[in-house]
Amino acid sequence: METDTLARSIPVGKHRLPPLPYPYDALEPVIGAETLRIHHDHHHKAYVDGLNKAELALAEARRQKDYDCVKYWENELAFNGSGHILHSIYWTVMAPEGEGGEPGPRTAREIGRYFGSPGAFCAHFVAATVKVEASGWGILVWNPAWGRLEILTAEKHQNLTQWGAIPILVADVWEHAYYLDYRNKREEYVRRWLDLINWHEVENRLLLATEGQLPLLSAGGYE
Ligand code: MN
Image (cartoon, rainbow, N blue to C red; front, side, top):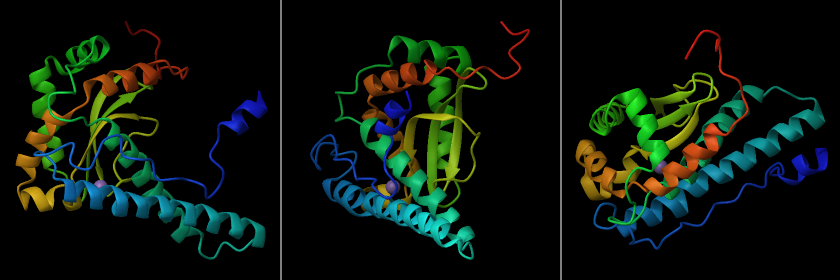
């Protein structure tokens, strides 16, 4: 049991940049090849490198029993670790225009149950994502503590969340994600971005998230 758990963990300082699941120009014209290349090869890579560096620095601090810089490295750990996680999801929840399909049965059911309709979900998601202050993300999450979906936003990568929420669909609204293609028109980017959603992957992620064994909070008395 313990061996299995260890075998499935990523060693300290050994995170790797995942390959893009499609060519750089696959998302054109919604996202240009140059944007995608810089975003993946440079921005995402910097988060992977930063995460590895923070983990190694903290391991060294434990060895040395020297925690003078622990606050700095904990900040780096949260920022770069969250950046790595969100970007890794971002690439997979996009697909070339016309290939992403429609929301799967579980996705459609959960969106309907919580947001009322696909239109209400989209309106809320676009509005929340467009309004993120400075750099951040719009995120559809499954919150296992409530047993339902929610829309959250993140400032930078790590600020503003509900702990334990599992990101299902993430939209990057750092300027590096859209500025070459849309300049300051963030809303136009987000609206076009909806056409790239890979609903097959969203359904996969939702099914995996809802299979979790964590109990509902205050579950007694609810339907
Ligand atoms: Mn980004």
